[in-house]
Length: 254
Ligand code: NAD
Image (tube, rainbow, N blue to C red; front, side):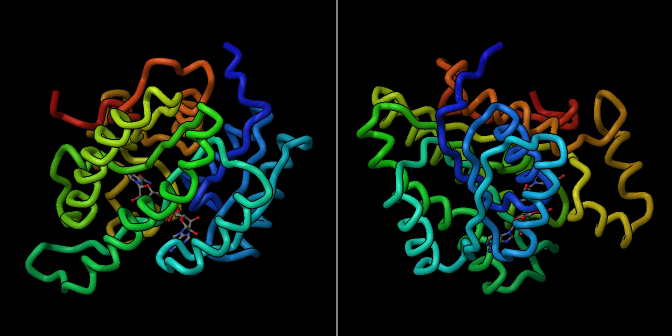
């Protein structure tokens, strides 16, 4: 299948590692120009080197930005947009603070809101006008199966990600006729450094997660990347306003 996005420009936030890097790699493999955004230029450069190992011709750029800092986001992403439009926006950021509801301070909720939801609102406000003008755009937000089904100790993730399900549906209805498709990917357990940390704290963690999937293993970032590349491509013409599970059958709900 030809995804037909080799002339497109994508911004992948949280693209220096894990799921974001998996998506950046999949888009780069399609010939898309990819801007990898995360806080540390050093990590971005490492990500670019790793993608170039398998895709030497990849069109890769970096943008050091803190997604929780509105002024920084407006300045950096505004600068990118003054060069040319961003056609594909991947909203992805590190996971929010975790813990039981009763122990999480209000400041942890503020942190979660700024990272998971507020950054998406700001980035979307910035990229939408040029997408509307050119009549083509793709927005994809990486949320979590926690949006649909309770995962212990992840109430902040669940709350804002359930909110993003509603946000996506609303936006998709408003911009679909302008050629802009808006979706979420809900990853199941994917092997990244975030989960490696959890495995260190509780050595049975990976086994318990893989036992809950239908196919009996944890997923890999490139398995999210390939679905993301399709959803953000010209080949996707009718999937919008929805949550797409990429979880190896982990989720129990229908
Ligand atoms: P990760 O921690 O490995 O990567 C997060 C990326 O976001 C990194 O590039 C990091 O530098 C960047 N980042 C973090 N805070 C930032 C900020 N303020 N500004 C700019 N960049 C920032 O995480 P991951 O495992 O790849 O997960 C990505 C997202 O997917 C997370 O939100 C996570 O909650 C969600 N998710 C992950 C899994 C999983 O199994 N790994 C499952 C469901 C949902």
